[in-house]
Every structure is written in structure tokens, then in C-alpha cells.
Amino acid sequence: MDFEVAPLPYSKDALQPVMSQETLEFHYEKHHKGYMTKLKAAIEGKPEASKSLVELIRSSSGGVFNNAAQVYNHTFFWDGMKPSGGGAPPAGVALDLINKLGGWTKFREEWINVGASRFGSGYVWLVLEAGEPKIISTANAETPLTTAAKPILTADVWEHAYYIDHRNNRNAFLEAYCDKLINWDFVATNLQS
Ligand code: FE
Image (cartoon, rainbow, N blue to C red):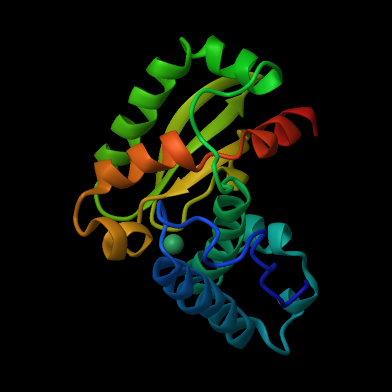
């Protein structure tokens, strides 16, 4: 596998004031890169080292799974945001998908509810399951990659994702994510791939 964390698709101050540079400094540099450092240490010199990241996620358990899945999930989270993003999607495949879930207002409400209801750490996801859109959450490092569902978008709801900017208010983070951060181009690309 490629032992480098992908570069952020924007500068660390690009999402300010919605997501602070300090949050990205910690979340990307310390947490995301930290998972890769631990993954490398765990598989160095072992047969697993020749696998791709996705192969590792689908064939491992314990610490290797947790760190590999966290590397993948974080890259997916970064790619799903952009400066001046969010709000209702523009006309196109992303809007068509959101309309299948009852429209933007309903989607936003459910995304926030599902993310806020995840006890402890995890992620809220938009996935395609047998071609149908669903909003789900996963615990800790778990990822739809180990299921038949195709990931389309995710938000990290670990406390480290929002504590610097929103303290304990996960709802405020999810509201800001929906209204100002979602990268609908990323959603459209995933729907068409
Ligand atoms: Fe995280």
C-alpha cells in the first residue's frame, strides 16, 4: 500500500471560520497522520504490507483494522468538504439523490439526528445500499467498506472533530457541516463512479 496520508485538498485555513485552522492542525496532522504511523508500525515487514489500504480494511481486525479504517475514513471526510460548501445541492445527480431522501431540509435534519445520536465516537455516512440512498452511522473506526454499501459522504463525529471549535456541541458542528462545508462535487463524483 501507499504509506502516505493524502494531502488535504485545501489549505488548513481554507475552511475558516467554519472549521478552524487549529482543528485541522490537530485533526489532520496529529490524528489522521497518527493513525498512519501506527498502521505502518503494525504491518512493517509483514505480508499485509503489500496490500492496498482497502484490502487491509477488508481483511484485518483489531489494531490494524482500526488504524487502516481511520486512515481511509479521514481522507473521505476531508474530500467531502470544501470552502463555501454546504447548503442544498445544485441541480444534478447530488440533488436527485437528496430528493430521494425527502429533500434538503429532511436530509439535513436526519444527518444531524443520526450523527448526534451516535453514542461515543464514530461517523455519519450517506451510502448507497442496493442503489438506494441511506443515512447511517458507524461506531469508532467502522466503515461501510466492510459491507455491501457504497460510501458517498461522511462526517467524523469523534470529539476531536469538533471540540476545539464547538466544545461539546456536536449538533452545532453538524449544522455548520451541512450549511457551509459539504462538497457536493465529491458526492456527484462518487455517484458517478
Ligand atoms: Fe477524526
